[in-house]
Length: 399
Image (cartoon, rainbow, N blue to C red):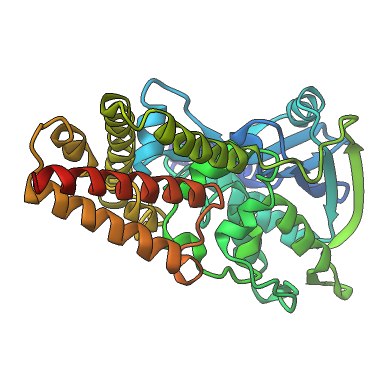
């Protein structure tokens, strides 16, 4: 080997060595012995989208200036947001930002904010950090959002299980025997109209009893799950939460048992229609106008429920018992009401609706779906108007 060949060979080895050092530096962990990992829990807000709370993972290291919040609750709010959400094809994504953004939001929206420092070993912290960074890559950060089974809270539960494996044990001994619908009802007691709308849209799958692990799709239950969990570290089995800190507490106090105005409003409507019927009994046009509007509204609602059941990716909007009173074909009945002569078809259809309402009322407690209390007076109202319509139409039919 001549001098020139040796020179280039040594230069080549030198370059390879430099590149190797740079590569090792690039892939070395930025974590230190001072790095702390927290579960961040933000309390429920006033808006429906924030009414169930929020969870995130926070890496902090003041010695190196690390401040990284991993947030699985981010989405693109574009022109097609509502269309995607309704169809059940909305993608959420993992985002990374500074912690002060969460703290500022909590203060602005009057939502409590707590930090639970996780009692993880250095190796577990490293594995969690690498997992989240890999998940944050553009090709990995998007996921198909599912409110009950795959959201910002359940993702963290699953990430921790994947990272820690058998080293993490949740205490799943306490089972409140609650369904998914009953779990979200805990957060909607002061949002009666939203609760009413969600109960009508959700079908029987929402009434499946959740397991204690599934409770953690709600941030406050994830926080409780972490409180009772244990993790195996170099010092043996330890509580997963080393310390909890409440950073912000709201000054506003919400009413724990607000009045159910939705149910009262529906009962008031029912009573008003009964009184209306007797006052204007001699004016068939008034009653026909109300029935036309009622059939049109319930028919349109029925078509919405059919759309949610058959034409979206939502699993929890299937098998909806509200279709027993919100029947899609009511729109056709609204038109047939204006025919002067009653037909056997219309009378038969009204009898069919009457049977559906009676089945719903008498089978109220036995339905596979837990019905919203405000629906009951609406079914009573439908039953009342159907009986009046049948009496009037059958009288016309026999003339």
